[in-house]
Each structure stands twice: as structure tokens, then as C-alpha cells.
Image (cartoon, rainbow, N blue to C red):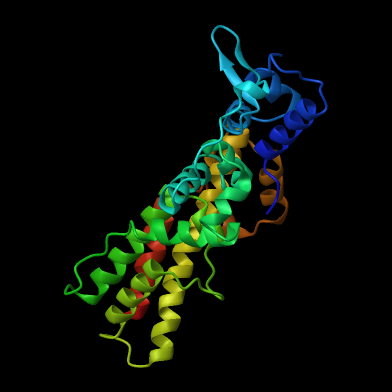
Length: 286
């Protein structure tokens, strides 16, 4: 996975601390200073400082802000968390700072335990991700199983979309070609396939449609996650960017045809796109 802007800021500060350039008690650069130095949004710089505080490399003091922590200020060693607590914390990190920020080292720092102790709960980061997928899909509240097939499929798709919106990292770890066999995903697949049995006789076609519906929602979720990251790093939303990007305007004038011109000023709205796409997919099944 590509390094994020927050990753770069964290790595640069960590290197200065490890090299002794920033000694224990020294004031860490401010959010504004980091944003200017690294050319990132202030929200990105703030996330980087928060991550270093969670790792125990920085501490917060009154009237000063973030300072480099001495060893005595680092979290004390404690008992490793149980698996459920570890998974909940990992989900919180991924929700707040993105999947690239999630590491066993960071989780260990949050709990004040040696990194290797976490491997008593999960054998690897990949296994941790499976637990995270299972936990967030367990949040899905499916519609009544005795309702009309279309209402069941639409309800399942919208429930999946809500989970993706709460957990933007999820779309990047789900696989349609190598599906993860975790209980909550299998429950979801069973629900959709049972609804499709009412209108599609061929089992291969039924599973094709299940994959197509899941892939549509996942694809929209990937678009949402990418836009959220871009907005966090730049402070500019999609509409503002398209209105003020001279390269886009020039490309449309030079290469755009009459069909594109007839669209005019397109009002980008991902929620509307999801509504439109899902309705047309369900129309096709009908």
C-alpha cells in the first residue's frame, strides 16, 4: 500500500527523535509548522502528532503542547489485551488514521505492551485484518428474510454501504477473487443468494449477480475512501477541486466531445451515484 502523507510526516519526526536531533523534553514542531514543512494539510499533521503520542514517542504538557517523551514517560508494560479488545482498537486506528497507520508496533504502544506479546492473540497482521473484517460486517443489520426479494437485496446493499462509510479502510482489504471465509461475510452472502433464488434459476448466474452487487458497493466505497483521503490531505473537496482545476478545464476543451459538453457542470454526488447504480442493477435482475 502506498505511503500516505501522514506516514511521511511520522517517519520524518521519528527519524529526528531516533537520531537525537529532538531530545527528551524538547518541544515537537507545531501542527502549522509540520504542515508548512511537509506541504500537507493541518489535519494530516495533527494525525501524525497523535500517532506519535500513541506510540509513546511524544507526550503532552500543559502550556507547551507536544514534547519528546523520556523513557520514564513511555507507557508501562501491561498485560496483553484480549483478542476482542485488540480488534476493537485496531478498527479504531484504521478508522481514524487509515489502514497504512495500522501496525502491531502501534497497537502494542497503545496498550503499553511488547509488540511480540500481541502475537499470542493473532498470528499476524493479516489474521488481525480477518478479525477486523468479521467484526465490522457483524455490524450489518440485514432486512427481514421474508420480505420481497428486491427489498432484501437493496436493503443488504445499503447496509453494506453504511458499513463501508463507517470504516473507509474496509474496501481495500476485501477481495472478490479470493474471498475471506469469515462468518459474517458468509452470513451476508447466504442472505443475498437466498433472495436471488426467487428470480434466478441458474446457480452460477446467481453467484455472478451476488459478486456484481458486492463489487458495485465496494467500488463506490473505494471511490469514497480515496476522496476522503484527498480532502483530508488537501483541504479541498471534489466539487471545489473540479471547479478550480485548470488542467481539467483545459483537457475538456481540448479533448472533450459534444456528449461531454452537453453534460455541463456535473453536480458530483456519490450518494446519488450509488442510488442510481443500485437501482439500475436491480432493474436488470428484474
